[in-house]
Amino acid sequence: MLEKLLDTKSWNEFIKSKLDNNYSSIFTKRKVNKILANNTYKDISKSIVDGEYQFSIPIKHIISKNSSSKRRVVYLLTLEESFVLKHISYLLYQYDDLFAPNLYSFRKKTGVKSAINEIRKKHNLSGLYGYKLDISNYFNSINIDLFLDELKDNVDDDVFNLFSKLYSDKRVSYRGQIIEENKGAMAGVPLSAFAANFYIRNIDEFFYKEKVFYLRYADDIIFFAKSKDDRDKYIIALKSLLNEKHLSINEDKVSYIEPGEYFEFLGFGFDGKTIDISKHSKQKIKSKIKRQARRLLMWKDKKNLPPEKALIALNKKFNKKFYGKVDNETSWSYWYFPIINTSKSLKEVDTYFQDEQRYLYTGRHNKMNYNKCPYETLKACGYKPLVHEYFEFRKNKDK
Image (cartoon, rainbow, N blue to C red):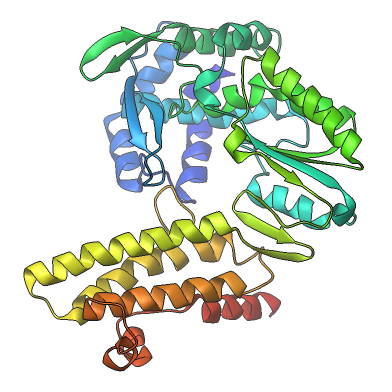
């Protein structure tokens, strides 16, 4: 398979597939063009195909998670190495038949929207007993010895040798020091998605053979059973299978879903036939709006700027978030609008956003803000309400 790294046509297909869509924050179009210009990726590719390439020692980073107190660990290789591994990840789609149909992460022609559509199509869901969980530190907890033992019999030798060389080396660079640690599939390295999918594919296969309505996206799993007893039986089986892989459940994120009860999955909330934005996603965007409004208020006051200028900056940022293209993140109009069937949460976010804009304009929260900063001022400074844009989207889609 890796010989395709030497094929110009294969590279052109890969690059086109990426540049036609939003690239990650690591690979902006500008950086991609720079990588293509210096041709280093070709040397790396040839060395990998020849089995001679020695990867750089990955740099370990501990970063904040969603601007909270929680932290996550990621590992980064050089930009050129990551670019080549992105292409290899693209080539690994040829192994999609190794996975059960109930896996929706990091595969070709499937994803979050496919998973949500499966839930939407399930006609008797309100009569089932559900269980939702999250695997703790999924990517970096993978036992590499177990992973490589099973991988060897399922992929080409050149692919196995690549994974073995990359993952068997325990060295990492952290704060300028070279240390050794068990780093699992190394979240942040492009091949980690395939490795993580493959590592617990036996769990997906178990539920598929049992004909259980089960969906997995990376470390997020949800399944539904016909009775409480069946649910309990499958929970025990799931925990046992995870234990065999040296993985554990994040108990803080476990949900028992009773028949007809509201539940959330992959950023969406389900309440009977209603599909809305999840409470978690709403709280997340409100926190972002609040933080940005406060930053801009400090900037406005420090520079002694007119409030309209701060409002324009705030709306520019969130218009991009809601309706534009954002590096490594999909806009709300692309992500939520095609799936949700209610404007309830959009209206709630609109109200909150307007309040924070008026706070940015006046420097305080009170009822007088409506007079000091009327709706017309918000619109003049670039505000585009989500509810209006959503119904425009639905109208154009119907046409």
